[in-house]
Length: 192
Image (cartoon, rainbow, N blue to C red; front, side, top):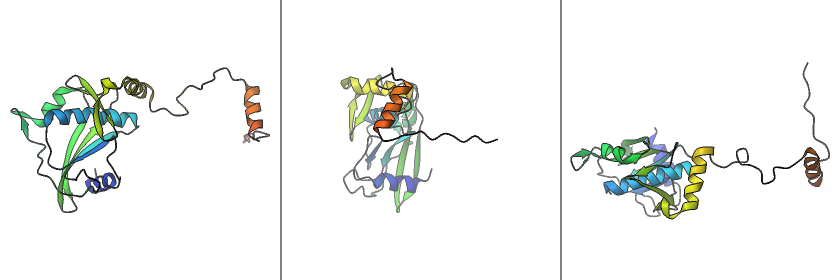
């Protein structure tokens, strides 16, 4: 992963999106687990393979590189942070920490895989991002239903969504084209 390119791409947005979060030196392990759930689920909803939690960038409008002292190898109650998080995430979600220097400042990026088989929960609770806020998904049943739909069928597109009308005939299609000014449909040429 090209850390510099990724961090600069994320910083180019005027505000945080549902699939990434900026912090400076912040660490509250249980809330970090909730963020992983929220970002994983939001990344799935938006059709992204990954979401990100970035330490060392200010979370104000300027998104300045400030550096961080955050240590991803720290312990939580005599347990490595990575194990603490992984043990409470359900189903298991891929996440990795990457450290490096960007613009002369130490940056840590947590790359979070999107939810793939079921919404990602932390400690039995599912979260989602609405704007830059982390919310308990239980409070938003329509979003939860939409997330299950995305996980089952993919992000809604013209190709994977059923048409509103399923009783169309070829004659109706020709009338539709005629209304749009299409008088003939080009034929494919056959090669011999």
